[in-house]
Length: 76
Image (cartoon, rainbow, N blue to C red; front, top):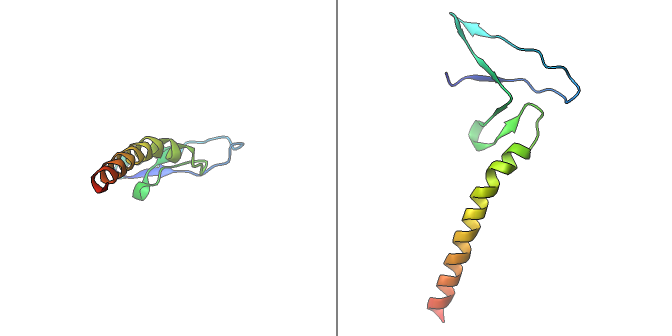
């Protein structure tokens, strides 16, 4: 099932389980989700999103550096 529940809580709040279902099919409660490519967690913290993006950005940076040095060599 694609539908998940994320309950936004503070770090001091004691977590209690939430059960929502329809016709014996229950949705799953998660601590983090990724709507529209943005990784968010139940504390509305950016840490998980940043940790996920670092390898992708590092690879993109490497590709741009390689590409720019390649272009510079052909232009000179």
